[in-house]
Image 1 (spheres, one colour):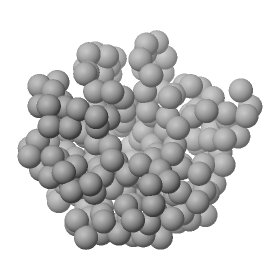
Image 2 (tube, rainbow, N blue to C red):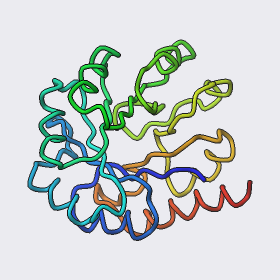
Image 3 (cartoon, rainbow, N blue to C red):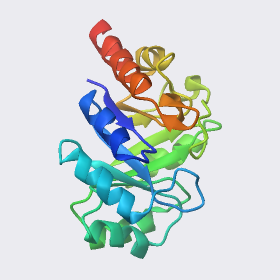
Length: 204
């Protein structure tokens, strides 16, 4: 079954919609320069709303290991997603602090050469995206021969995610803007997105 990650949550009700409709991972943005950034108090409320039913992933863009470690030390997040230019050295340093924590490393895919970094990453999972949370899709034909399990992101919505799953057979899919209406998470779109993924899985 295709894993579903609903990212960019900003409210407790977003978390409840994600978990109640069957998401596998929830995500929050923890780098301040992005408009979906949420502070520690909000993260605590979202984590509490999830009630350990699904893990909460903290998304960081080129933050020092100490910043990521602080969130993990406080138990505010369960997983880490690195969405900048973080190296394997960065990943190893983070693992030294929290060896049990799973790490997702995101890669912006513009051409086939961008896939090399994803193949060589020491992260537990890789995420292939069209940008840095921009909601931009990329040319899926580039990943036709990609040999590592991956999460697919970039421009995914209830309208196209079924086709994306059937065409690419990703390990998982990730969406944020695709389940929003006027920059707010829309529970109906979250439900429809997850339903479309399940339809694709059932079709196969």
